[in-house]
Image 1 (spheres, rainbow, N blue to C red):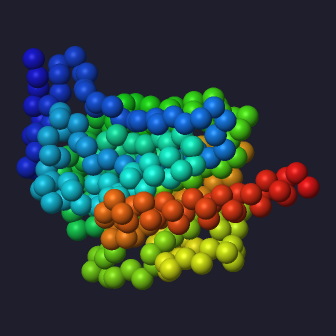
Image 2: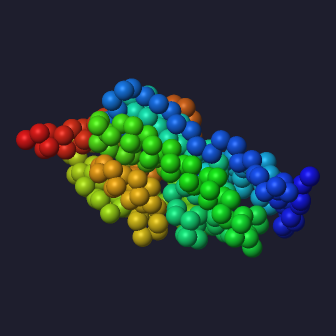
Length: 270
C-alpha cells in the first residue's frame, strides 16, 4: 500500500511502512593497492529516485546544471584512470541532496536553484528531510571516509571535480577553470603558483565560487580530519561536453596535479 502526497506538479510516493527506495546513492571506483590521490565527484548524477517522480521539474530543468555537474564525472573517471586513483561519486541529483553540503545548509535540499523553484523540496516534513540525510548524505560520507581509512598509509591528496555553467543568471562567466580551497589553501595556492602549467585556459583562484559559498564542505570534513592535502577544481562545462574535450581536460589536469604534489613530497622528505 502507498500513500500519496501532492506537491505542485509532482507526486511523492511513500510506502506506509516508511521505506523509500533511493537506489544506489554512491559509487566507488577502486584503483591500485597504494593510491596517492583520491578523487571525488559529488554532483556526478542527475538521477532522481522513482518515488520522487520528476520533483515538479521539466525535463529541461532535470537535464540542466541545476540538477548535476555535466561532464564532471567523465573528466573524473579519465583522471582516475590516468592516476590509478580511486573515485567516489554521487548517484543521485544534488536536488535530492547535495552531498557537498551539511544537513543544516539551505542548499542541501534547495527549494530554489537559480530561476527554478524545486516543488518537491518545498514544505518538506522533518521526517522527509531526515530520510534524505540518512539515505543519501550519510552513506556518501561513510563510503568516502571508509575508502580513505582503507588507504590511509598511501593517500596524500583529495581532489574534488565539479563543473559550472558558462552563463549564470544571465551573466557570462570569463573564468574557465577555478581552483578552490577551504580551510587548507596549501595545494590550491601551489597549483596557482606552478609556472610550468602553460595552460590555454583562463584559471582563477576561488572562482566562480569560494568557501564563503559553502562549497568546501567535502574538503573540510573529509580531507582535513584525515590530514590530506586537498583542492576543488571547477571546470566550465562548455569545455567538457564531448569525450574528446573530457579526455583533453584530464590530460591537462593530471600532470599539473602530479607536478605540484611532487613538490610537497620532496619537501616532506627534505
